Every structure is written in structure tokens, then in C-alpha cells.
Length: 326
Image 1 (tube, one colour):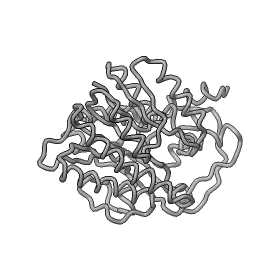
Image 2 (image 1 turned 180 degrees about the vertical axis):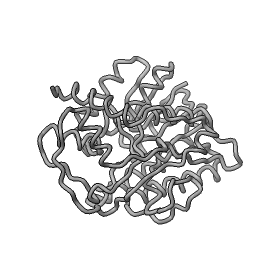
Image 3 (image 1 turned 90 degrees about the horizontal axis):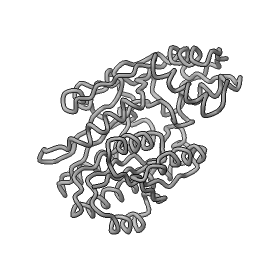
Image 4 (image 1 turned 120 degrees about the vertical axis):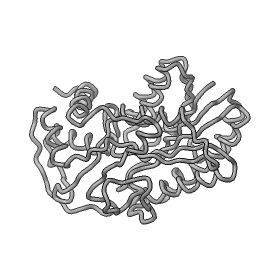
């Protein structure tokens, strides 16, 4: 049986596909390889995956229901879907709101309808990416899956909360087992260039000023990608058996780090100092994120293992090798 990974050319999708292949799974990757960031990075990830004969790739936009359903009809047995494809980024949603509705809402519905088509081919579970951004401006820390999440502060967050509600509805109506995972600030090798570790490293290496928002008074629950992947696989292997088979979990480090400390770790790993440019808070941003992971520990056995002090050097090692930085 195979497992479908949407967003397979993306940061987390690439690592999940690698992990599934490493444990002997057949993986069907789906990705439209758009130009939200440099497609050459996505193509480089794909090249590594496609070297494995157990990986098959389909270049499809998940919101294209005709192509997605045609693909489903032609597939053999499929046991699960790991749905990671989405339009990412809080700030970009201020510039291009329509792509978030198309990718994150329409795309999510198409994937769930595709899952319904695959039920007769053995599909047992859909695991999908939500986000810590659904907690919006919550001031209670740490963020718990029991908290109210009805006040998003960005369109990106609103689409991710919408996905959770849609998934609950499909679980209720069709008994389709689903698990939503709220990721907290993922970083690591092969990461997205629009995320903090990458942006900070680029600025330091190029000698540009590094913009630091909210004058550096920020905390993030930075989570290394290997820990996120481990959580995804734990969730995939444990679908809900409840009457409405839909659950949501936090996947984070459970230990927020000051932004200035994160920058210091990148400086240390690069052996260079940053020139900082202090700026006010950006629209749609929040001052702190902090994952309560006790429910994930208790139900999934999730246990993050890589602190920032270990994760940042690993990321910088990859970054220097990929970009030939001395």
C-alpha cells in the first residue's frame, strides 16, 4: 500500500517523504511546485526523492479537482494521506489573499473528497497540517488544544482554522478519520527561505541589516524538522477511534526561545555578527508562541529531542554546504 504526501516538494513534505521511504513505504508525492519561493530549491528536494524507486511524483495543483480525482481513480491501494500542501506565510497573505482561499480551503476540500474516493482502496487516515497561527492573539501561555481559537489575526490563520472545521465536518458526516497537527515555527535543513532561520542567515552572510520586529521582544517555540516529522508519523499510525474520528494536536518543542537568543545561535554557528535593524510589530504577527504538548505526549508518544542549541548548527551546516558559504 502507498501513502500520498501532498506538498512533497515543500520543506516538511520532503522530510516526511524521506522518512516514509526510509521505513519502507511506497510514497506518492503531489506538488504544483509554484514560485512562492525559488522553485530550484523545490526541484533539488524532488531530485533527491525521485532517486528512490519507491517514490512517484505528480505535478498537480491540489485545488484542481478534475486532475486530483483522475489521479485517485488510477491509483492502486492507498493506506493514508499526509496533506501538507498549502499556501504558507502570514505576511504574504496580506498581499495575495486569493491564493490562500484557493490553496488552503478549496485545496483542503479537494483532498478530502479525494480521500473519500480512496476509501475503497484501503484509505484509513488523513493527517493534515494546521498551524500554531490558529491561536491568534491568545495571551494565555502555553497554547493548548483546549483553548478557544476563534479570533485569528491573519488570513493564513483563518484558512488553517477553516481546514480544522471542515475536517471535523467530514469526520462527522462520512466517518473519515483525520488528524490535524498545529506546527510551531519549524526550521532545519532544506527549510523555506521566507522563514526566520533562513532570512537571518541570508542577511548575516550578505552583510545586510537584519530586520528585528517588535524590537526583538518576541518568543517562538522553534521546532526542529526531525521532531515534526516524528510527530507526523506517530499521528499517521494512530487514527482516532472516536465516534467523530477527528483530533487536533500541537507539535512544538514546548520550550519557547527569545528571538534575540535565536539570532545569537545563528551568529555563533556562522561565526559572524549580525547588523540589527529594530522595527515595530508587523500586521498579523504575534509576540509569542508556546506549545502545550502534554496531549501529544500522552496520546501519540510525541517527545521532541532537538533543542535550538543543536538544531541551528545542523541547519547552518546544511545552509553553508548548499550555498557554498565558507
